[in-house]
Length: 171
Image 1 (cartoon, one colour):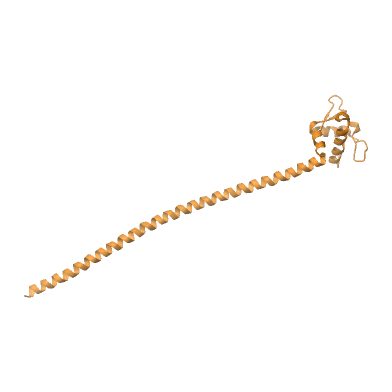
Image 2: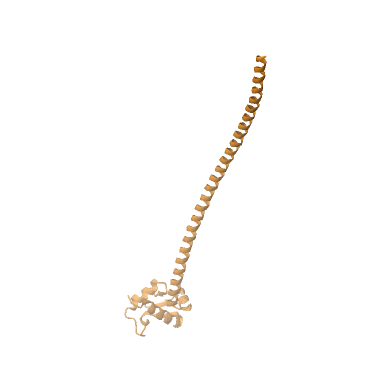
């Protein structure tokens, strides 16, 4: 349509804003040099499509500034509006990226917590097995001690008994 469409929108929204009743005939739209826009009908339809103006329904000559268009001009104009939109889009993109990164970190944190939970269970299981082995070792050593003690007593008394028996048999 036009190479400098944003500049043309800025100029003509300002014209509409400053006009009586915020209304103009579309043939009064101007370019950046102050000359009439050649294809004013197409330009007016574009502005209407953007929601900036309302065209007269019957012939489409009169253009009325919409509330939306009025607010844009009041808040700095079309170029400023586009800049704010661009900044907002950048902000939303950064926000979305940060939210994505946050979710990724939360997922990694949950995986880390789950791995810690599994390792804690393994440690608890190994500790239980270690205690069982220690108890078995203590019981085994106690049995060896008692068995050795009994064998020692038996050997001492049995050798004494054998010695007595031998002496008895010799006499």
